[in-house]
Image (cartoon, rainbow, N blue to C red; front, top):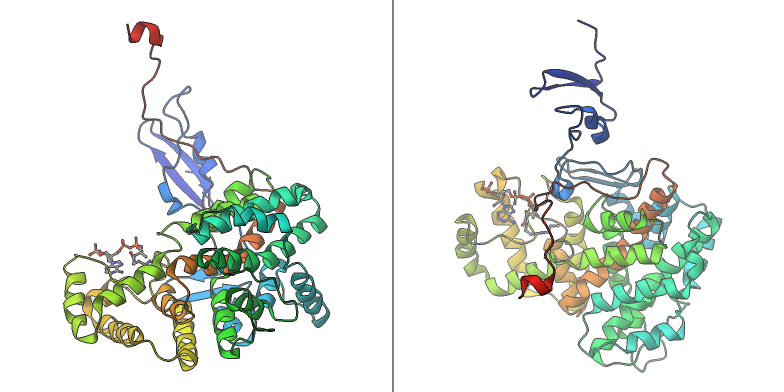
Length: 433
Ligand SMILES: CC(C)(COP(=O)(O)OP(=O)(O)OC[C@H]1O[C@@H](n2cnc3c(N)ncnc32)[C@H](O)[C@@H]1OP(=O)(O)O)[C@@H](O)C(=O)NCCC(=O)NCCS
């Protein structure tokens, strides 16, 4: 018997009795390496069936690291806890996009660039004003980000690094403007232009809430809390919307079109909509006395405790801890929300209850974020828009990595065909005769 390398997988095909050695690299095998395994010379090669990509790595990435069992989240190696406490959203955006923290000069230039690209062409405004009065703000955001590709046709030149940088700056800068306008549209309020004297997040709040005052001065604690929420949402490795950005981006389309696909993916209730479900659940529970009955219903399998459990985190979601603290800061300004008491009590019970402990169900990022957004007086439809603004640097960092990655190809999965074959077509005139 020949000596096999330890870093290989030996596969025996029981259909043929043949054995194959497949190299293992970074804990993975290449799905393409299984293609050599065939039942006969003319038979198709063995493929991998993996709906939802539950066990398929689609790329190599140096952007975000997650250890779900230990509850670790790091952007470019920096723990999320430290970034949320000591950094700010634009610095984190720089880190994600560039891969390293900025020097003072780099930071100042980055903030300046982003600040001075917050305005959009007036035609974008006119285009957005064409939406129905009750248009969902996520639909408006998705369409308007996609529409930016028509305003910046040069964005198609994705092989030029300066050009890529320009589009990244534009998109991070303009997302709050588009998001705020989609909010004002639903309310029938006049749209507020960016105020370039304000910070990124303070300007966003100004565009959302300013009325007749000369300057909108948001409470610093609210600005900080929203900035932290943006940081917490800035990236989460290969989640559904990032995968959508990468998949569309793999066609070498411009980044506005790729990010519009990401916004579309985030719009779905399985991805960006869970915090709204938490809020509805807390309102339905109504008071602490009803919690035991509710928990019993969950344990009997009648419903789920929304905001608990995660596909990746089998420990306390590190973002949930930070958000809990932000919620306290926000309620200091806005006055406490009785739903917070219900949430805290639910969490306390669930963390001690065997059902949840055994299944490793812990609060996730959505458990407290809806409460904070409600304290800001955002309607639930806006929650996902806030998520999208926060996630934009992550989408762009991943897109940038994709377009420079020589191993990447156009995303084009295989299928297992289950339909008919070789039917004879009968023209309509004969079929309907
Ligand atoms: C996030 C979520 C979809 C992850 O699902 P998943 O990794 O596929 O886990 P599963 O659905 O296989 O759940 C595993 C077990 O825990 C239970 N479970 C998972 N989440 C639960 C929840 N929130 N409440 C009650 N039970 C839950 C399941 O019923 C299952 O129990 P079983 O083994 O007795 O059948 C799931 O935890 C969930 O629906 N959570 C609520 C929605 C939510 O907060 N989503 C936001 C995610 S950021």
